Image (cartoon, rainbow, N blue to C red; front, side, top):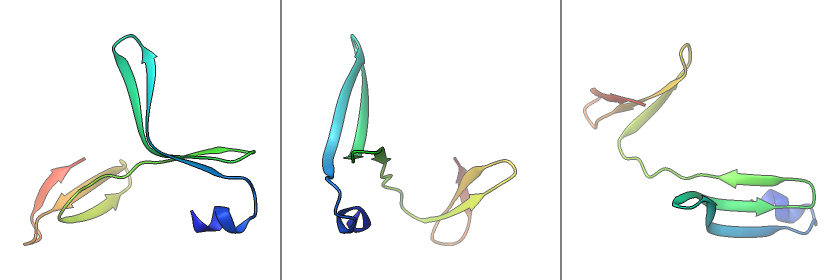
Length: 73
């Protein structure tokens, strides 16, 4: 985000944004960055162990501390 601040543009950073889409339905955004030209959404996932991004098909593999595959996300 420091890059955006260095551009000298007006930037608003909103943390933990909750938007009501319909009665009983909400959308949660970790960080929403607004500039005059765009909105940028940052989502953070708190995941332990080792992760590997794969393609064909796209997926995220999760390995435990001993290198065993424990989940395909």
